Image (cartoon, rainbow, N blue to C red; front, side, top):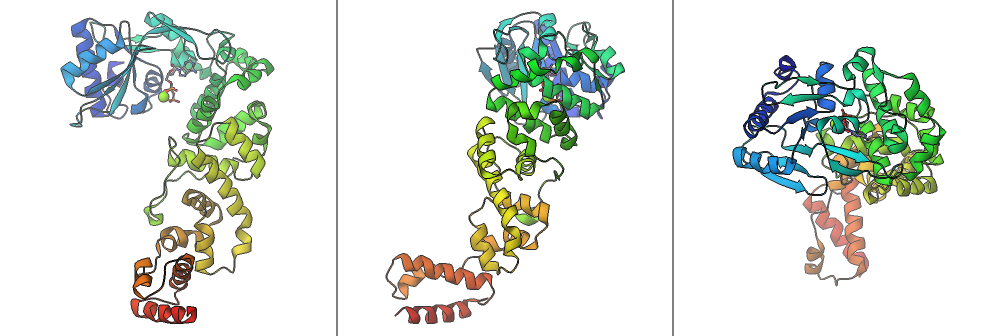
Length: 424
Ligand code: ATP
Ligand code: MG
């Protein structure tokens, strides 16, 4: 494994430095420390590791180790007492990557009832590997000590990688945690693997029934991360084929996954906010996926999947905008603008990507920023008494700017003169 750990194509230099620092401290303190999970799997597949995936497991207290790390290398620690885990915020000088690293105390998990979160107790690495989802995700690399770099693979993850198989560790795995079904299907699509025969059989009615016990946040997360995959439609189709969508909510059966351009928006469109906690790719993924859903289905799903309010709104407006688009064909820029001002820019961008309607792009890049030069204060100076008609005049003035009837200050003054005369 040492060769792979030192390969800059697989692990960026600053992350290698971070691994060396942690390994050195683990040696010094004689704390058994391991790199575990997705990183080990991806290294063995010769795929570059995602920095955010790097988890360290300790046989011993991860929080205590974290404080020693801060002493030795700087940075800050956020400790989570309940599970004895910590997040190390690496020093800001930028020598180490990633910016945050998860430090985990090796643990054993007991599921009291299906779908609920497990009860956790500190344990040895072996217990920690056994609590994981699949053998390919239950391998570790020792860091520090004489055998640093050694691969630990008691559940034959390497065998499964060679056979290209996703296999559960025990028959109750999907009942304990039904999110593992989604995880399995994501790996199948991502790596071109197959579900091992018994695992395939275990995605049955009983396991699907367990989905009803999952919280909205946990379910939504499974889709959020699916939208980050290279080809989400393939995985989403698998979710449908295995009956997962129906089991979550029948409205998902009308969701569509044919259209999913997951590009990042070009700066041409200016800035617009995405709903909290979601990336642009995830937000657009959701909008495209649910854009055909009517109001009541979309509201029901937003509730079941605990959407942030801004996401629910973005999905709802995108549906309305896409539906109404053909009737706006003869609209002037001001008519477009006054209509679109009501919609979240993210919904407009999503519908633009689907329709390539030029007015939507014009709105995002230009029209939404168009404002008259005159303000309320100017109207007051011209002797107009404040009132609701202020807003109306400024709105009409904005319209003539948008429609290019007025293009400079002089024309604006003239327009205001005649508009105010008409008021008298
Ligand atoms: P990905 O590349 O999709 O991020 P990953 O393996 O890094 O894959 P994470 O969701 O980041 O997956 O989780 C990290 C590790 O935690 C996994 O490799 C696995 O060992 C363990 N794990 C995560 N979720 C579960 C789960 N639901 N049940 C059991 N183990 C899990
Ligand atoms: Mg990960």
